Image (cartoon, rainbow, N blue to C red; front, side):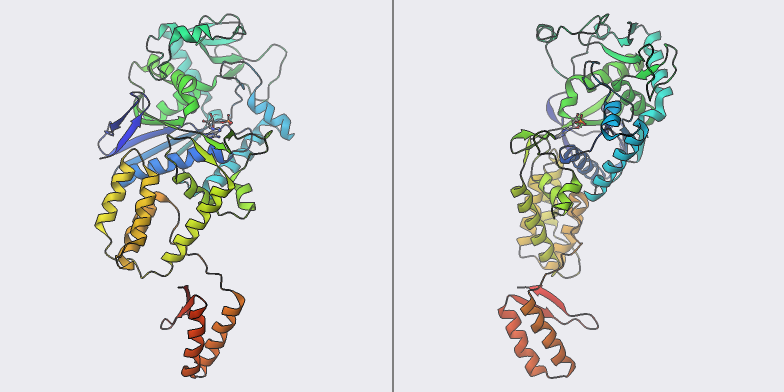
Length: 456
Ligand code: AMP
Ligand code: ZN
């Protein structure tokens, strides 16, 4: 039975989907105004693993993700610069081209990390009408009010506002900043629709019943998730920073509109730090998956590295640890390359692996069990059968065998031996093979196939 930590209850719960066969999952996707770095990508690998684990439990999964391509403001409290317009200026492109460029960069990184694409990917700009419709429902139900700069959600009308974040409203009030938007009634109120400023022509703006402008960030996730998965669905994922504002606001809007519970299980991924600091361009510790690849690393070594830390734990990235992960992955592949064809499997290890992944997706434990299997005395065909099954969740493409790089002098011996064998001078070729073995390698002659080189 799958157990999963639910941020809503702050405890590990048994996973019981609404429908016994089909599981519905929504993930907050990237804002495509700049590069997605290896911190962002840790989250998406986490989502990918979760979906794979749920599928391995026999469920059919519908996984929906949005692409935030509408400009939102840099601060969570609806102030600051528009992220997309800022990105467009920085790269000297239009907001629409920026969105395309960074969506591609995101999916390229996802592919390199062997992340399976969600079943449905929706762009916020393709769902403006759905967002307007939802705001209208909230307006009809009396949850909104108008200020000089937009339509706001009145959080005082939604009594369970702090259900997810467990925040204390009194403490929030004490710490509130003074630069609150004029006309906002409560510090936690948030924009559903923002008006374009008078005289300003934004690159992205739409007409609405309230005037020309653009939707608030939170409304897109409520509108698009409910449209694709219904008013109540199983799992919603995001980064831990989404708990207090973005997801709290999603719950308020969705439940105020539908009168139903919005999400059963909230899953939040912890952050990636670099040498103990936040990843940022100014600190020079900002890396994309492509950067990692350019430095000579296999992107799947990064995936391996992510798997070594539990998704609810903060992870510290160093190149030393990436190097370690790459060596471990190479070693694993080279061991596997010498195994016989998969057959039968080891029930003992498969069972333990399933228990680990079902224990709140404990991938560090699952990886350790995979290694125990590799080092066990089971015949290699059985180990191969089980390991390839495990790899459906690990996603490390373990059957992509590592090419063995043979030193030049050993390669000379191999070629020499090959020549002697062709001349049927087997006694001499055996002597050469002995030399090859002394150098730590061996050659296996398989009928009708090229001679296989292995490390011993
Ligand atoms: P940003 O594009 O920087 O605003 O980040 C968007 C989202 O990506 C954040 O809200 C986080 O959920 C996630 N994210 C950003 N940086 C990291 C990081 N270093 N580690 C994990 N997730 C991150
Ligand atoms: Zn979202």
